[in-house]
Image (tube, rainbow, N blue to C red):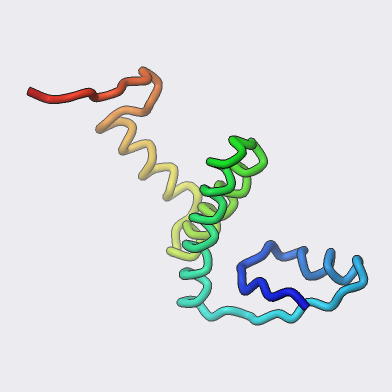
Length: 102
């Protein structure tokens, strides 16, 4: 037996069963789910920083989408917030590094 205690994608239990093993699962309440999503985000960011893998970026985005939904926002709401920040502060297209301010 191996203990994980981590949030997994919805089809992972099915995949585990197909491999001849039996997963033990717990359905999280809203508070536990939000906490688990935030922990999962740090886990996925760390994995990306180790590998720079596009697949890990996809995992990060999936977790971010779940957090947005958990916060009661639609993707359209989120994009409006993101675009407002771009309008006010810009994006990262110019590749600017602020070295110092006098």
